Length: 255
Ligand code: NAP
Image 1 (cartoon, helix red, strand yellow):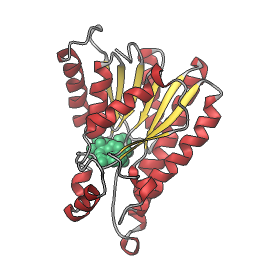
Image 2 (cartoon, rainbow, N blue to C red):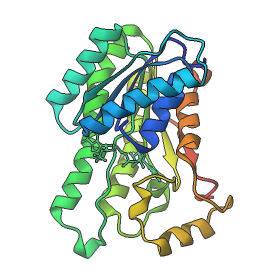
Image 3 (spheres, rainbow, N blue to C red):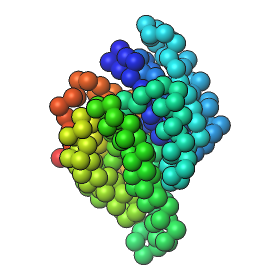
């Protein structure tokens, strides 16, 4: 129960790493506010999260899991989401900025629409969510914010000018906020997952995946659970003196 009674907000929680992270957090005793642009999948995810915590034999009372439709690119939607969480739980201990999209194309073929859509979700979305949650955490004098960067921020990736720009930008923002918010008792860190078995990776051509696996010392893709474990650590009190760091969860790909 490493997150007992903590209140965590997770964006993009309807599927993939966000959903598995929500399940792990619930098993660790957290109360959860889940957000995603897809309402139906998000509602279903909230039920699955409650179920998996109960099946795991969580000694906590039935974990409270709320879902609200959230578009991280829309300030009004973000503010409403944060207000619901604060109104219901009375505090916010953890923000996991997980929502992210890809829209891949090589430089010469990338449209401005592809460029802008990815920047809006992956970069502006994290800015808006953090800006909305930070005042709550500042008032509490404590909080944990974890941003979903990527191995490609450190390594580059063919056909992902937009996505790599956002994931590298997130590392910069993480360090700025670690400085600005650290003095208020808030730790801001990032995870940089390698290639993880989710729908997002299903869009990458097999040839490129095979090449990346050849360069991964552990010789395999990661599992969403393995990223979720890193989130649990960076969200828990165990990481109270870790601030402004980027934790690679990539099987050694960037060595
Ligand atoms: P995923 O399966 O595609 O899940 C992302 C979720 O975010 C989806 O449910 C998506 O909804 C939602 N979302 C999209 N736009 C949104 C918006 N405007 N507001 C709120 N939610 C929105 O992705 P994943 O593979 O789990 O990745 C999660 C995070 O980890 C992302 O930030 C990703 O960049 C990062 N990451 C993933 C990998 C990997 O290998 N999978 C590696 C490194 C980093 P829709 O599906 O309806 O769009």
